[in-house]
Image 1 (spheres, rainbow, N blue to C red):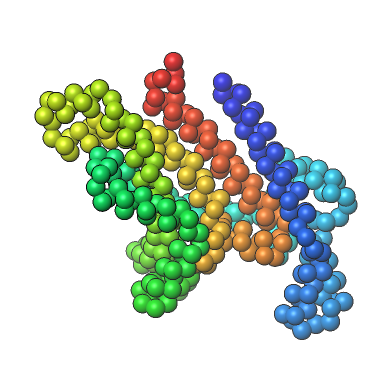
Image 2: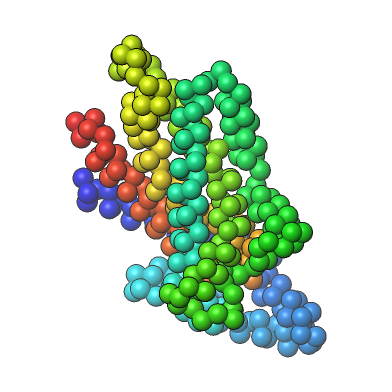
Length: 325
């Protein structure tokens, strides 16, 4: 069973990497020509000189046919090398290891907060389906689901950072502080993370609430809920011990998937707040067409998604006896 899942995971990663490679290489336009125009404009140098510099930036990345580039790319990954960033001129793995902790920090807090708030709202509206709270939560979920993440992030930035000045405009911490496990640095990190965490959380609460509501409504039809009501148990106890404890399984097992999804979708929110995570570097790499960096970041995102699926399957197996047969 485990060997089969690992084999499928490997195939999934290979297919995802191949699709990513093909899509990046087929971006419309001449990437070297476009980069040369940018260099010439920014530095005020003749186009022919800028073109030579742009050509040198990409080096061996674009040499040979598309197939030779692909096999060279797969060979490098198999040997443990993600290559060197075209523009940062450092190994891609260094950028990933620098950015991943920041994204994981913000995303993990956001997932926990949104899960805690959303599942409790879901239980409330499932129990009181004819109340105003049901209409409110459903409407809220519809609005946030239809609103792009970066719009929510931009609204928070304008209101709380620009207009009110309560929070910093960008960055992960005050650069005047010495990084480390010391009070001022930790406080600064938490302070700078407030708006990114809020943007993620606001966007995710509605989804958790609807998921929990659907699961809880199914549970409310079970005989043990009817029996608990007939015994005259307090409403709070029924909601927590009987309805909530049984309805929480589907949302709980989705935590890993949502976490991985946030890792992959962090570009717009992190880009808005200039937060130095995976999404921020991915957005910058796409803008500069830094092929090696894009591929490296996508590789780690894909691995995160695949591992999340495996963790979800494992959680189902552990928590739900019906899966074990």
